[in-house]
Image (cartoon, rainbow over all chains, first blue to last red; front, side, top):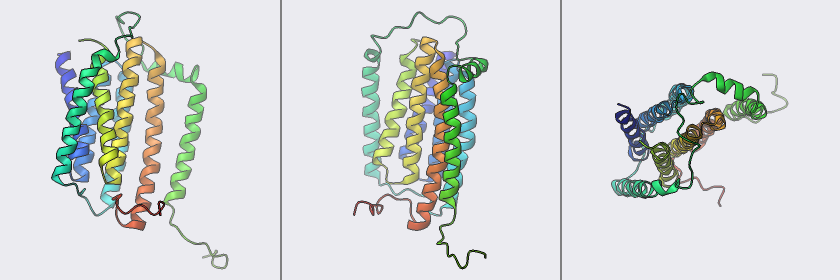
Length: 173
Length: 100
């Protein structure tokens, strides 16, 4: 069962990724990215990182994808003009990259051995561990990320504001 | 099933796919999605190592990457919409005014 799920999620991941670079319409692209994200979340689930998997689904599939689709809908032109030869070249390159990665993958981590197979539950499984780590060891990055989110919010508002030349005389209306 | 490699393969492939998309596509939105795919691949690899060594740091940094990716998407899409207002297209073909 686990092997089947692994191959299913892997296929979702890879086919979704391929769809992003091959498909033509923006909405199709966004949907294949959704498939890819769900596959990634499933793989995280198989690693017993349940909290991050749920976060992945809610943040990526829930927020980021919706934002993408909103922007796509705001724009009228909904196709990406890529001809068939470029598509075939991309596909061939993708297969070549897969072969290369699959060929090198066993040798890549040969020198790395873990401290033994982690029997029982992983430390990544519980949300409590994330909270403890965030508020003790990673307190400074946590605060910096908060500041970064504030900066991003202010930046987005500044960018998205209508671009007008302010005239001192007509400032009141 | 062996532990680390089986998760590193999809991670690397996702990263390679995103890289190819970012390099060869001519469309700002698709390029942006490809960058998101690369981030996803990096997150998957980080989590694979964290789960293999049973270490919390990888998981927490995946959390940070998720946050930063969300912020990045908001800023990037705002820039793309503004660019669409000015140029009336999202193709990168004509966008070379800074190079002139």
